[in-house]
Structure formats: structure tokens, C-alpha cells
Image: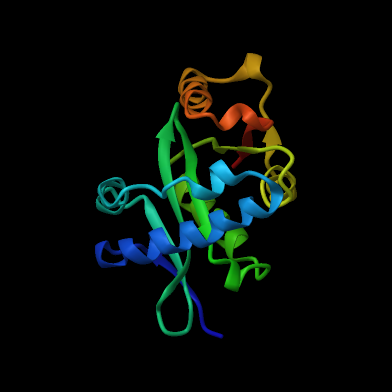
Length: 170
């Protein structure tokens, strides 16, 4: 199967939202219904990432996105704001490939690290990112931007489950 990681396109926004919904449904199976039912980023938000060249897709052999990642710049680091893979294409290292792509992009721009926030006890979150080379950032070591992200997540109710910020040096 020929696959490609490339910049996301505006016309793919509905597909990206579908990928997010499909990936989110997995949370219902582990009693995290609020996460499962959370709406994906709005078309406007996704358009901003695409227009800023900070959105990439992993495509199948028909050039249809099956996974995507969007990245913010937070305190000098590339922050993975969202990464999702269609569960029908899971367990094929698509997420890992997207992370590696973002790592290369960030390194070219002089970023010292990748960061993200995630659930610590969800197998395809915290433990997965540890296997991808990320390490938990102690709360006392959070940068101002990461602290702001964690506060926004808490106000959105995400702290009902254990959450952490993680970092991977480049």
C-alpha cells in the first residue's frame, strides 16, 4: 500500500472531522463518554492550521486521509494539539509516522522538543506516547504556555481522568 504524509487541504476538513469522530468513539468503550462525544475542532479552527501550514495528513493509496495531526508553537516547541487516526487504519504506525514527520518539521525550524497533553491511563494515549519517546513533564516544570493549555483542558472537564503534559527532545 502506497501512503504519503503531506500538507492537509481545505477541502479535506470534513474528512479530518470524520477521522476525529471515529477515533473519539473508542473512548466510549472505556467509560469516557464525554470525550467520545466531544466535537472535533471546528472547520474554522482546522482551516487556520491548514492555512498556517501546520496540518498534515497520512493518506491511503487513493490519496484519502486516514490520519492527521495539527501543531501549535508553544514556548518555542512544536506542540501536537491533535493527532487522530481512523481506527479502521489503526495499528499500522500511522500515528508514529505523523509524529516523526512533525519532529522533522520542528527540528528544521530549530525547535528543541515536541510537546503534547494526553490521558495517562488510556493505552493509546500516555503509554503509546512513552513508546514514541515522550516523557511526562512534572507540573513544576511546565512552561507558561503548557500551563495555560492544561488550565484550559481542566476547565473543559478533561481532568476528570488523569492527564499529563509530555515532551520529547529533538
